[in-house]
Length: 168
Image (cartoon, rainbow, N blue to C red; front, side):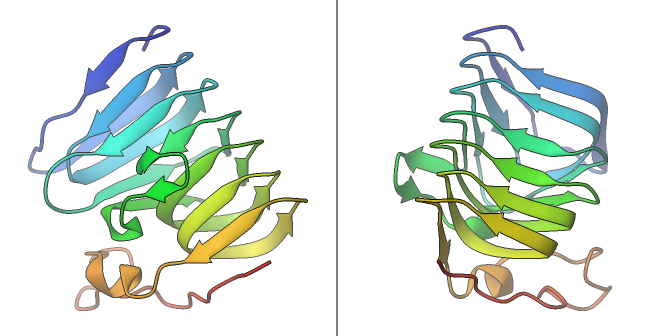
């Protein structure tokens, strides 16, 4: 998506499979509820992505994910998150939120979750974490129970296996 561009996905049966999704500065992505499999997700500064409609967008990314300066995901505006149950972000790699980035989601990192003067709203699961100065994680109780994570957490469950609130 070019600089200042917009891209929207419609709800489909099945899943979207994308090799590389690149959001330029300050592009906007609109995700319909559903499943998105990406090899790589590249976000530009001031980029945003929103979940539109009823349900959850499940975003699975093979490579590391970095939210650069002032990138937003599932946010109304700065410090105004939508409910984290609308967005699930999964990677076996690292997730990094850089300066002033804000994300409201259920987040799973198979390796490292790193916040550098950034904010995460919701819940997270990770192998190890680094919370920099002025970083903040705000737990949203009930977000996992409200999310439909069937297929990720087992055929008959809607809650994550081990998710604990992290505060700093």
